[in-house]
Image 1 (cartoon, rainbow, N blue to C red):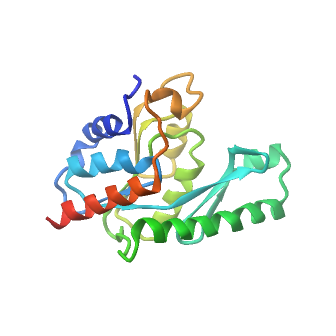
Image 2 (cartoon, one colour):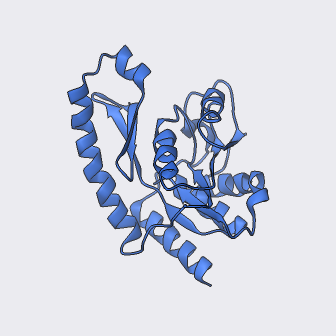
Length: 216
């Protein structure tokens, strides 16, 4: 299946997560930027609070689209050892890339959330959402960081994902919901007709809308 856009993908993903609708112990955590429009639709349908969970991919220098790992809020760093060893990437190079990405991570947290405190996942069902899962390194970093908050349950959800990544993640979290797992997978963008980059302004607006909806 090819989704029209992230909004449609979010509505379809929400159907797969219907068991969590109208529960007081559920929190939706979106990976920016592309995961936010998807998660907004899910949060709206499930009647659950929405927050952003900032994660930054650590791209291989010169091949930035190839992830050698990721970092997330709370000082978590996940390294894809297979990529690092295959390309013989030295530790100091990983540290250098991570330092730059930490600055961007902190900037985005301030930009997206402003002075609103982050949602606490302690004792709750934390549903982590992105617009797709390729290698899964970004989502692994997010799951590791959320685990530190001691949630009751961690659910990873995405409209489209590589089947192998979904299988691997099932060994690391409590539940994985992948609406579509096409083979061959190739890239997330291929499964959306409109894969326009989500802007910072859109992220802020959707988070603010989500906050107003829950408050109401």
